[in-house]
Amino acid sequence: MDAMSIRRYLQPSPTLRWHPWAPLAVLLALLLLAFYLGTRWGYDASWRIEKRSSGDMSASEVFYAAERAKVAPALELMRTASKLDGAVGRYLQWESEPPGRLVQWRDTLESMVFFHGMRMPPPNREFTVKLAELRLAQYSAANPRWAATASICEELGRTNRDFIDEYRTTAARYTRLLGRTIRAQDLAPAVLDGRCTF
Image (tube, rainbow, N blue to C red):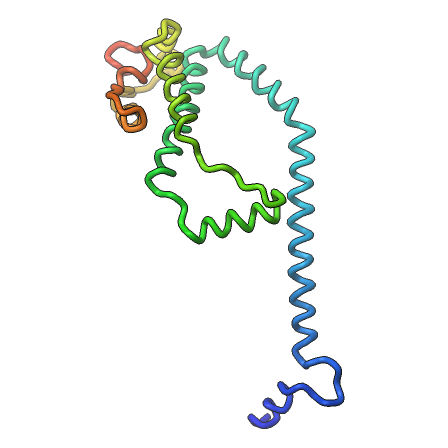
C-alpha cells in the first residue's frame, strides 16, 4: 500500500456521510461512557453498602474497644493516642508538601465524578491543634489515667523497647504544631525510665 492510497483513505469520501474515523470516535465515546457509568455504579454501590453497615460497624468498634480495654488497658489507651498522633503527622506532612497541580486536577475530576462537584476540604490547622491538645490533656502524662500505661511491658510480653526514643519524632511534631516544647516523656507510656527490658 503506497502513500497515495493511505492519503486517499484518510480523506472523507464524497459518497459517504461519515468520515472513515467516525466509527473509531464513536467507539471511543462509548468506551468512555461505559467507564463513567461503571465507576459511578461501583462508587454508588460501595456508598450504599457502607451506609447500611456503618451503624453496626460503629457499634462494633465501641464494643471491641471496651473488650480490648478489659484485656489490655495500656495497649488500648496507647492505640487511641496513636490515632491522634497519626492525625497530627498527616496534617504536618500535608502542610510541608501541599498537593501539586496534577493532584489538584485529579481531586477535581474525582469530585465531579463521585461527589457531584463537592470537594473534600483540606486538612484544618485549628482542628488539628484541638486534636493535639486533646492528646496532651487526656492521653499523656498530664492525665492521671495515663498511669495505666505502666502495664504496657507486661501486656506486650517479652520485648525490649525504648519508648522515649520511639516518641521523639512524635514529640517534635507536636512541638512544631503547637509552638511550644513537648517532650517524648510527655507522650510515651508511663513505664519506668520509658523502657521495657526483657
